[in-house]
Image (cartoon, rainbow, N blue to C red; front, top):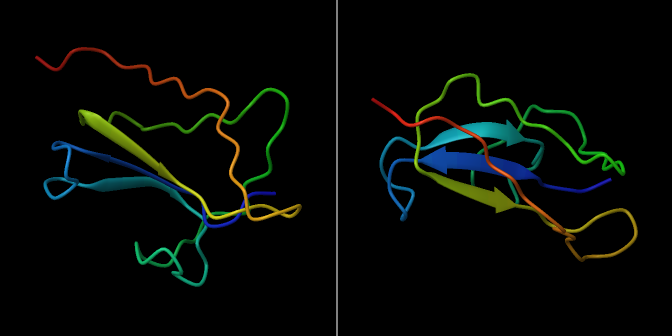
Length: 86
C-alpha cells in the first residue's frame, strides 16, 4: 500500500489557478494539501485508474509518501488521457 497519495490537476504549472484534487488518501494532512477521504492506495500489476470525471485542466501532479515496505515511491509509468478543450 502507498501512503499519502494525492493526484491533482490545474490550469497553470504552479498549481495556483483552478486546482482540483482527483484522489487524496492523506488522512493526517502530512503533505499539507488537505485531509483526504479516499481509501488506501493498493497497487496491482495492472496499475490504478483515476477518473477525472470531465475535469478541465492542463497540468497533473502526483504526490506520495512511502509505502508499507519502505519510505520510497515507485512510479514506473504515468499516462494521462484527455481530449482538446474547445
